[in-house]
Image (cartoon, rainbow, N blue to C red; front, side):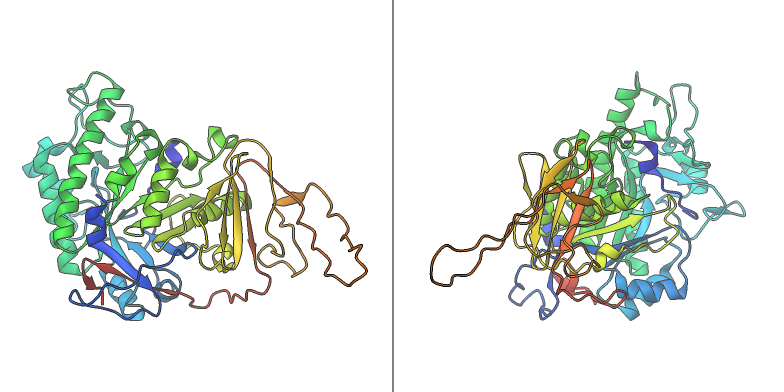
Length: 468
């Protein structure tokens, strides 16, 4: 995964366990207590919208907009007032606090006047670690601390150290409980240090051993922090990277409430290959989690053009479930509340499972639409359902801007019978779908009002208690 997929310019910046931690139902269900009969399982709606709002302090207008648009919001630890305002405007929204697993920081805002800030982007303050536990700073083979390349004053911590894990967990659980956050978005649950530094950790012989030490440490760390947050009826949602390289890692690391994929729908080979998300075991793990509906999938697609936006949203729609949320990201530092017009398409509820055609194209049908994603590095063709149009297109338009027909429909055959019989409807023509591109089609009668509050899912639940 390129370094760009790990950009997090923070400015101040077991399946069973998951089932006990996070459940919910569709809008219209009656809230229940732990003593009442469980609500019906929620339905697989098209991806909800979420906001990774760590780029800069949100304005009051952005908070009001977020209450209408998003089901999940992530904010910095110093934005407790914004979190509480969100709750007033929309009690159903889940608001997570950003905390970094792997670093401590001493840039202005994290350390001011020689003291750690009251609300930290990390779990352990730089000054506290410096004064009381310098052994918690990771060191390279030359005994030097490791500052992340491209992120000044971000210092790699010894995530494998049980004392560091315990201290981070206790501090974060206490803060989350005291301030009233729904849980934690835990950043930098990464697979390799190489995205941030070429250093080899002390006690390891090479980069491979360094990365293994980090991964093993983070595995243990997530278990400790996840158990503690679960016991406090809070969520732990790590930003876990490169899970296509390590089978089972997404499943294991998402068991405490969900996980974030910051590089969803990313194109391989410098933008010339297929979609990285569908490599290895990652997509199957994401698909299984989405179908169970027991934990959140927070998906981010970095978009620089319409193709990336289409392929990201449609790939998320292949994973449509009760808690699948998607956002595009047009900046590296997440400074803007993001929205795609595709999120207004009105696909509705998935009526089948995503299926893969022999040519590598994945498709899925919804009550009000259909999506197709070409995950390969070659041009493919696909036949759409009858009568659908591109979002926003005139009712008689079939072919979206991203696809061109490869054949012309044959003329409507007529019956040779003397009696009057209905004429048959010609099948839609195949559409050409470029490499790593997608099609989103909808029912032309589906009316969608952009910008209107259309959250149709019920609130998430924390444990057996409804979040108020």
